[in-house]
Length: 293
Image (tube, rainbow, N blue to C red; front, side):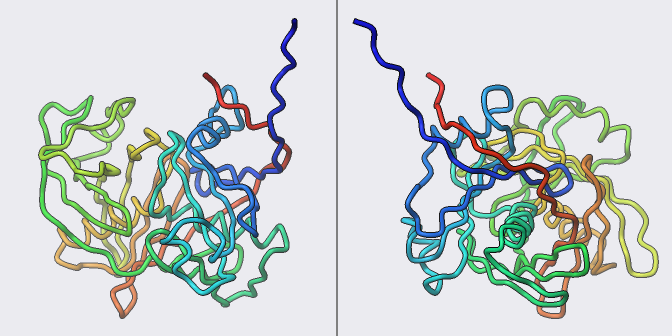
């Protein structure tokens, strides 16, 4: 007897990116369709699914099923963010800006120029401000930690890296020049010594000139749970704050060039780091969630 084919659910989605850091976005205001690791991996698969560095569910606080996201006032928009490998993540700087762009284009929120929208993440409330065509996210205070050695394909010897927390964990390594940065092979995760207990995103940064109070940085990143990405928003902040620290606080505004484009990082008078850059929705459709076995 022939077995009937399994019917997998179809879900409406949008595809968005911030400087090439791309995401699958789903609307679930009432929390009726929680994500799980299998569904996330299926959606994020670049050959058998839609493809993305992560998957983001738009859900209202109070109905997310996640204690960290439900800690905000009921009805606050929550960013339920998952890495492409099916692991949950605390925060994503590009993701939260793309998330707000999605809410605006779907008619789920409104935001005039100069206004701020509060979004709850697993790293707390993040404020996103509209600045003309760009969106800027207040990622809050950052924290500099200790040092560890970082080994990566393409580096002749392990290099010192600085721990930086921007709501999620990072290790920033300074390189001497563009040749070293371009010669990296980040197909495999860099090795950390000591090992980071919960893993970490690793940024390789080439500091540039500081002129008129503005610093320049080129950066590549290997993201925890994803691999090398064209951009990482919290990673751009981490790199800027590490270079700022190494330079003795020589600048509070930094232009960070990543393979996917350009981001701006600035520190306000409260010591909060702001991330500004483009956020775009590029496609919409319906997808069948069929986990591969």
